[in-house]
Every structure is written in C-alpha cells, then in structure tokens.
Length: 62
Ligand code: SF4
Image (cartoon, rainbow, N blue to C red):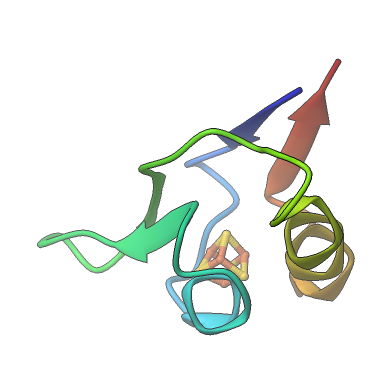
C-alpha cells in the first residue's frame, strides 16, 4: 500500500504528521507530503491519519 496526498485538498493542518510522522510531514510550503512507505508497523496510524484528515486529502492506494 502507498499513501498519496491530494495537494489541492490539503489545508496544512498537520494532523497527519502528528498521527504518523513516519509517513507524513509538513513541507516548507506548509502542506503535507508523503515521506515514507506504509508497513505493518505504521499501517493503523496511516489509516487513522487518513480518516482524521478534515478535507479527505489522504488516499491510501493498494
Ligand atoms: Fe493536509 Fe489532511 Fe494532513 Fe491536514 S491531515 S495536513 S489537511 S493531508
């Protein structure tokens, strides 16, 4: 699985980076980007980050 950010939807709230810092971070422009792979250790946190995104900007691809 891979995570993807729909950058046109991201408002830079930082929730995803706080929830799963292995996979998401806020970049210099103030928006989320994917920095890591999904694995069995962070998978639940990635799903939590995606479900908690206020603008549905996180897509988890199989
Ligand atoms: Fe952007 Fe959603 Fe992450 Fe907030 S939770 S920074 S809106 S991708």
